[in-house]
Image (cartoon, rainbow, N blue to C red; front, side, top):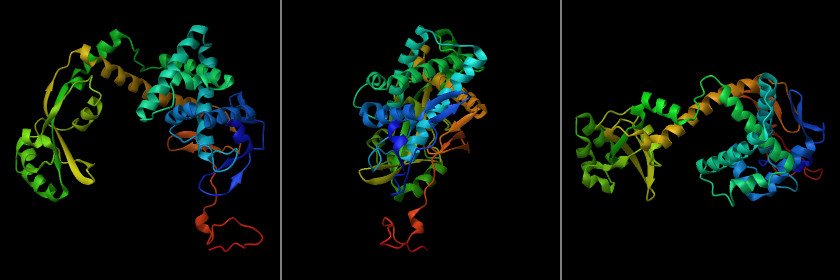
Length: 361
């Protein structure tokens, strides 16, 4: 795929293309460089290998499909891969300089497993069904890319462990966090009301007048749970739906429906979904372990993200102009794909030629 980029970058919104024929360096970060040939081979591997493409799309939240023409890729995809490589290089350089850290063979072996786990988690979160395992995806990487990704993973893991605010994922620390946040891991029982738009005004009026959750559900809900007063079930931290349920009822008082609702589709019909917590009970740590671990991973990742953005911001970054422009956006510094003229400015979007004169608005 990097070889594809070296030949041509195409924006999929039009027929315009431009080539990568400038410098021999694709990206450089504080003295660490990735050549155009290496960058192109990496992108080529991602595009040409379905299992690798699937996991990298989940990780980067960007399509890495081939472009409309031979040896092409979307400009946004090339820019996204450049951003991922720059982040890894910046952190590696920073850690080596400030902590004198060089990953050992053991660190690299653990980092490989960590990278495979991260790819699996990304695919699961994105609800992708990849044509193979993350182990196969890592194995499909060109050797230079695989070594770089594993070393970046090791360096990032070490960096996170040294950050202020990082909570080590040990059993003792997890128990301590649970003890100080025990109410966040209550087992939550909920009732729901699935209300048709035509009944929404009456539902809100009855709720405002003090009707109970059970009364509202029985009278207005279209869900089968209406016969039980809307009782939908109880969710422990070990339940796969726990995180979303906890978020849904986070600010709602017990035994009351909130004023806000979610719009959902059921059998091609639109409904307002109201969720009310009806009971909360303390969950033992043993049953809440997975949720505590997930929360700590999220907290650590958020902390690391902020610090890593600072590292990238301070790094000396150079990008081959054919890949995009390095600049500062609302989410921090990054490579922005080069913009192409819009076909909306042409009255006729056909390919221009000397035989077909363009008419501009």
